[in-house]
Length: 119
Image (cartoon, rainbow, N blue to C red; front, side):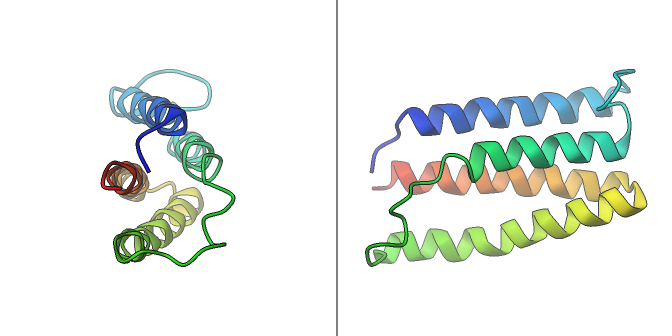
């Protein structure tokens, strides 16, 4: 599978995620992303749109190749980390957990893009 329009949409989503994180770190006085919980929610929603929204419907209908299995087993713990860090950040307003959400989302995007480029 080559890189296609879905990868472009996911890259755009990751760009928006990066923008939200950078604006938060710079202390932007914006309504939603100026606070930890708002930035966490924005990054989580944008990450879900870019990742889950762009997934292929037939992903699990055929047997996975060894390279697909490798990338999937790499992505699963990253997704779990992103979810756990997002929940923790929303509950405690932890800036460290927000960073974990951002970097886990970045790693998930990178893994998915490398998977598509490797095929």
